[in-house]
Image 1 (spheres, rainbow, N blue to C red):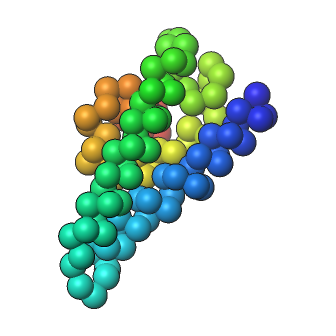
Image 2: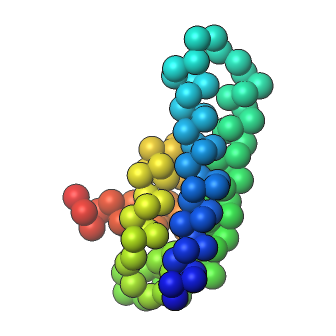
Length: 108
């Protein structure tokens, strides 16, 4: 289980964090609007979310899941939710939307 948790965190720090962060940078903070850069990172957000959605579809549903690793909530789940919750694309991926909004509802 520890290896699977590390794998998910590796995906977070190599995929989700950099691409979502760059999308925000090029959308809100960069001194000039560069549509090609924005599109690149928006497409990466879709790809990352698609991979996450595919992974969640394979996980056992359980009473309160699915979860990223195993059959219970873990720090990997908590690590993924903030960026996913801010992303507008999450609504296009049912398993990811259920996961993201479910975690948020549990902590509201």
